[in-house]
Picture 1 (cartoon, helix red, strand yellow):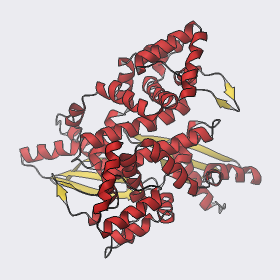
Picture 2 (cartoon, one colour):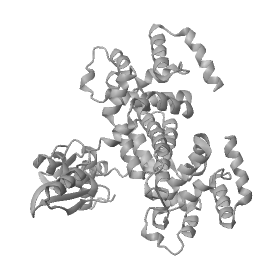
Picture 3 (spheres, one colour):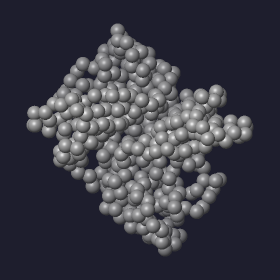
Picture 4 (cartoon, chains in turn brown, cyan):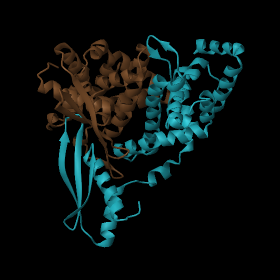
Length: 246
Length: 246
């Protein structure tokens, strides 16, 4: 890390824009950057990238790939330790609710990353790129990881990203349409049947088709990559059809 | 880590089975375990797990969830650094070829983990659980991560797992059916058309249907969660129909 610290002397030579970016990084991440160029890259959306090296457009997409993995791991460990008595299905589902695009978009706005992006995109239409904030947040995580290492990134994510989530609330707000539907059927004393109609597709892209019957009449269908997903989709459709509040 | 080192004194009290497991871990991972119970858990397949705590069956599935994330991150960084001029699509695709079930099964056999599993599963049918070796390898990665930290795990994965892959060979062995088909059509002087027929499903489960026409006649169809995947699937079917070697 000593070499990295030396990089800090570059700060003496920062121009006005670079100084502003370094200050913003310190604000968001909690510490000044060692290697500012990583953060410059992290906020470079592909739509404003115009430099090519060896045929590759220089944008934040590679950092996003890396940051997505790092974020996923740190959230995985956080949930693993927080919920010692929940199974891996619960952990997977909860993680996907935390690291989904919409949630990350919100966090990017909360930590002020969106402002930086808006400045960077000046004159371009940010709203046409729906997930730009969340994608850039992932790229930022990738930059922090390369700049400061895993342990620093973990602290950054735990203290400055996950803190914005009410994890218990996320868990309680289930979108479990199947249980909603079953609950309704029991309350109303009506019989609901789930039938797996078909499994199609190849080994890699399986598709399950599930139908739901109410008193022998098919009221809804759903498709999905797993039986569970197909049942959820079918249940959602059934809830809509039966006007069950979801 | 000092506390972890103290755990090593537990080794004085290991029974015969524990000694054998500790030796096997040292052989596979490169260092004796600090906390042997993590490794005991890592090789506990759900089919031989019979202990329950708070309603949770105590098996390696939670460790597998964690290890999958850690492995994905370390392979992501490895590829990010190895291929500075390749885009994120290439990185994603290459990673998925490295961390797929079949490849991990092979590695588990190469490092001797499969032997440990076979012993653990004594009397049970290992072959009925196709991905047991690869799954356990991921759980082992999770155990190493919790036992020894990120940096140690990274060295373990780079020096003892990735080393078994010929990454350049993996990249060159493409299963790019679309380019195979286009190559064939150019060589044969025949016109091939790709048409996106429909996009169905909900926001979460989109399904693209692509058809391929040869001289205005539909010769193959393919479905997939993205247009690219649907094209690949359709191209694969077309290659089979046209007897193009793949």
